[in-house]
Length: 508
Image (cartoon, rainbow, N blue to C red; front, top):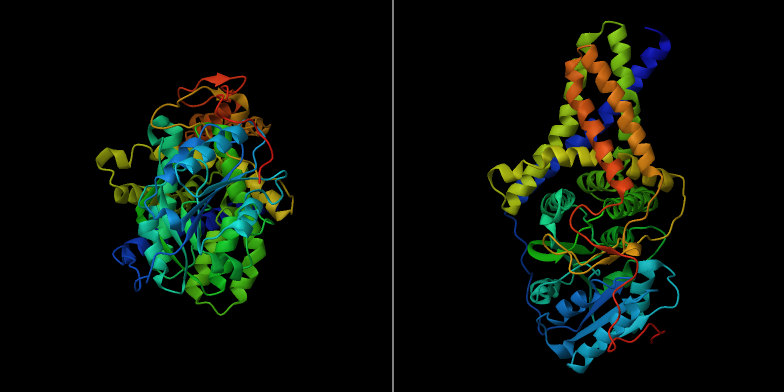
């Protein structure tokens, strides 16, 4: 073998090793979960009286879901004289009139609810929340995004934990209103189940840092101020504030048994946009806070988990590099008769891929899924994760290179179950980009590798090549077609606003 080929294979196996480490971290998460599974959180003491709470509802162009959101929040079981609701609307479309009229209807019913409209989107969601805090009267602040439908008992099950003066935030688990809509929404729901059921529970109960997820949580207002307030120098203002607050010594509580249902994106491009924002924001937060965390006197367990948590999306960048090198590595070793070395890939792939299976099967088992239901989506789940690699690697690269971008809203359609209630405007679909072309080029690249592997009888490589090929092909084609994976009607314009719903105007 030439020096170049030796260096090439060294780089290839180095990538496999690092990805194997990140993959093995999922085993650790599952281990910590089962180790601390029965360490149930309970309020430390009792509140002398129920406190005043402000619920903030940040929205931007959410005409299909804003009424559902406001109505569900107004059904929350809490004394009306102690509950304030803020609709923080940065919208530029018909949402303004719909939201204003909805707020007025509920105000006439006796709810303390206000509509706050900003002329500009400075700071995006973080800016809206910070602006709302200036007018808020609550000692505690809960946040719900537009796609959520909180349960009536949300406050009565979360507020008691603030009897402990050290508790700064309580997060509940996300549910999924439209899990059954399509195979894409099924996969997203499983991804989120893994994050909430396994990761959040494991981190919180093991004494590690975990994060507020931007919604379906409630903060002690003084915690936000003490941590430096909402900041918008990252795309994940929730993750950023969470780590700053915990660095200040505040404790967080996660309640997996309290579920707040939400809508997951039904459109591939909307899903990719959401993933891009989360991946980029996590790396931005890592650059911002990880040096402080590593230099602190926090326990090694906390530092190690913070490192993996904040840098986990780096694996996507490594996966793209691996995708380029894998077929070439196969050809190089085949040409030199190194058939046996192909088996060296197996331990690394098993570490990286089998860990995904164990992790998500555990999450589905804990969710209550039984039998075949725990396993049937795993091949698609793994392919989808690989197919997202290029999209998320781009996000990681932008963060590393300090390329700034705006906060891209994840379009919501009002989907519940297997359908949506009304035709959807084209502007409420995910934006098209050139990324699908790159993904399809990768799919073609792996198609050539598959042909070579079968022709050369290198059957040990075939399963992994098919996994990568299927992932890039599905994500690329779905993005190009720009179709909703399910039954969604699309319109050129929005449904007309009824006469009782005022048209947009600047509000107080």
